[in-house]
Each structure stands twice: as structure tokens, then as C-alpha cells.
Amino acid sequence: MNGRLNVIFAATCGFLVAIFVFVNSSEMLRSRATVLAQNHDASDQQVTGPYDVVKDWPKPMATLFPEEKGWTWGSTQAIFAQNPNRIFISMRGELPIIKGGDPLNTEVPGIGDNGRGIWLTVPMPGVPNRNASIGPTASPGEPHVKFVAQEGRDYRWQHLVYAVDGDGNLVDDWSRWDKTFKRVHKILISPYDPEKRVWIDDDGKCAIFIFSNDGKKLLQTIGEPGVCGDDDKHFNRQTDIAWLPDGTFFVSDGYENTRVVKFDKTGKYLTSWGKPSWDWRTRKDVPGMPDPPPPNYFHTVHGIQVDPVSRRVFVSDRENHRIQVFDENGKFLDVWPLGPYAAIYHLLLTEDRNLWMSDGHGTFKILKYDLDGKMLYQWGTFGPLPGEMWGVHEFTVDQQGNLYTAEVFNGRPQKFHPRPGADPSHLVGKQMRVAWKD
Image (cartoon, rainbow, N blue to C red; front, side, top):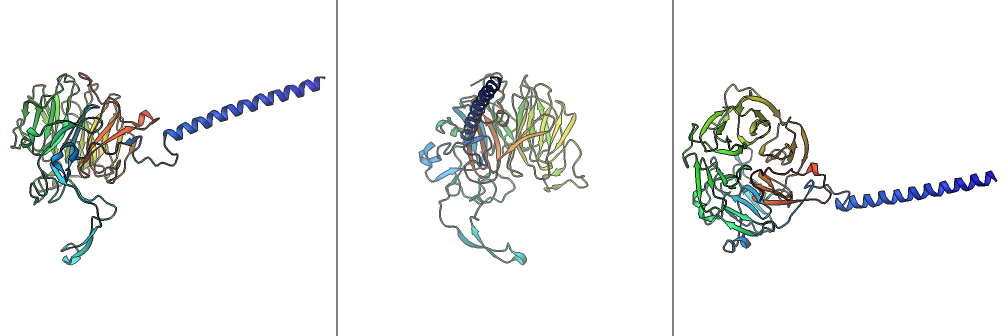
């Protein structure tokens, strides 16, 4: 009798175990199926990292501005999301659309060894059709390029700053200010400004223009437009701006100057720091400069952010391939060597106090660092296709987590939407908006 009970008991236990295994296996399969569905496909290389690119955003130039048929974006340097339906974009004029067709075989004289001509295929297979930023017929504004393009034929200097909504439709056109600008470098709004004034950093004019949010009024100009210098009233091709909560702001200055400039909230000069490891006049390294240069020496001061908690200032020393860290008065604190190819164009300090970067022409990636200089995550790849990148000069995040990029070399803005189920730590964090939310 006991034997029979033992058999029944064992069978019952086995049956229950089988049910348990089946249920858990089914749950695991369902979970895996959910993950696969969220990631689209387990073999997807996810070129766009934790995002899906939003294709056909914004609408074509001729849709935004019907009179611009046959034209497209030029070098796109600036982008800033005030909210999901007001995204500011700036470009260095428009360029003609390149019509698709068979590549051309053409002889380029003088480029071969001993000065001989070589036949090349144009555009070269596997690379973008053109560099929108650099070249004799690219977008105007690159000061050290022998520019030969003719306005109206090779480019149009109009619609330099505009705003679109989340679907890529035009919501505001600042063309009335086209003649004011020469080379818009960044568009920014201080996270601590309840008026949401729009700061337009124009390195070509060596000036910063501050506008009312609707763009109807130019409220203040910092620097003397068209006059470059290195004193308390002038910049020499400044590149970026960052703020402290009390309105104090810092300017990375920049391409020709090699310094950081600190101002009070009214725009009064307070101090500056930085020395050149490179001479923009000769376009060569300073003679005798060690490699790497000492702290506080710069070559292309191209991005800046300030931590409101520690009040540390993070500076992209772009062509020295590093980030330098200072206190708010210019005392050197730390340096982060980024490797031999890094070319950091833009820095964004997010609410969670991580520092995100775009590498414009080194690795072409979007990168996440903690505030001690440790890289935490990276994604991105070179190319002209939707979601690929070439020259991300500024990037921004809206309140819904959408990421927007401006590319100087591909000559376009792009919008990225978070993938369903994406790891939150891989998404660019919330952009700081303290005194305003929309």
C-alpha cells in the first residue's frame, strides 16, 4: 500500500514539475518574443543605437518653402528643441539638389604623382555625394577655403534660421534676419531663463545675438559684429555657450582664439583663460609645443558645458583630442584623453549629470561619459543614409526623449525616436530645462 502511495505521490510531483517547467518555458518564450519584437530582429545591428530614425523629417525644403524647388539644406550647424513641436534649425544657406544618375568619369589634372592627371569617378561609390561644409562650392562661411561659388547659382543665402514641428512642418521662419548672420554656429536657450530667449552664436560675425523667443526682437548683442579680437569686448570665432543657474555664462572662444571667457548674467566680462597650442595665423602647431600640450593649452575650443552642482566647466579641446575640466574661475582640474582620432563637436550635460558628446569627423559616434571621464556607451556610424552620420555639429533632446542632430558635412537635420523597449541608460538623457518646460 505504501509503495502504491509512493508511486502516486512521485507521479503527482512529476506532473506538477512538468507543468511548472512548461509554464515557465512558455513565459520565457513569450518574454523572448517580446524582446525580439521590441528589437525588430535579433540580428539587427542597430546602426542607430537605441533609436529609430524618423525618415523624411523635416519635410523637403521645397515643401517648407515652395519657392525653393530644386534646392536643399546646406551645411546644417545648429539645432535646438524648445519642445517637441518647436525645433530650431540653422544652415549656411541652401545648396542645389544633386540629381540621381550614373556617376561621371572625369580627369582631375595635377593630382597624381609628378603632377599628372588621374581619372576619377564622381561621386565616388560608397561615399556621400558632396561635403556640404568644406570646398570651393560648398556652403559659404568657411574662412580658410578659397570660395568660388556664385550666389543664386551655386547657393542661396536665405532661410538660414527656421523652426519646424514634430512632423517636420514649418512653424516659424526667421528669414528677416538672414542678412544679420554670416555663419550661425549654435542655437541655444539657457535652461535657467524663463523668457526662453534664443541665443544665436555666429562665429563668422564674431558675435552672439540674443533674440526674443518669437524672433521679432534682437534684444542684445555680445561682441562687436564683424570685428574679431581677443580682449574683453571681442571674440575671434567663438563656438558655444553654457550657463550657471544665476545666469553667469561661459563662451568657448574658439576657432581662432584659444580661450574660455566668463561673463556675468548681464553680459559683463569677468575673466578668461587659455593659451594656444596652435597658431591660427600660420595654421601650424606653436613651435616647441610638446605632444600632448600642457593643461590649459587649446587647439579649437569647440564645445562647453558647466555642471550646476560642482560648478565644473567641461571644455572640448577638439584638435588636441581631449576634454579639459576647470573650476568656474579657470583653475585646471582634470584632462580626459579621448584617443588619437576623437573630434568632439558638441557637449550636452543632461539632468542625470552625464556628459554626452558628438564626434563629428573622428569616429562619427554619439558617446556617453560620466563626470569622471569614463565612457559608458557609444553608437553611430559614418554615412549619408538615414540614421548614419557625418559631422554632427549640435544635438538636442525634446521633452519626449526624441533626439535631433545637425550635420555639417551631410548637410541635413535628422530626428531619432527611442526604440520600444530601449535600455533607458542608452538614451541621451533629459536636457536641462529648469526655468521653463515647453
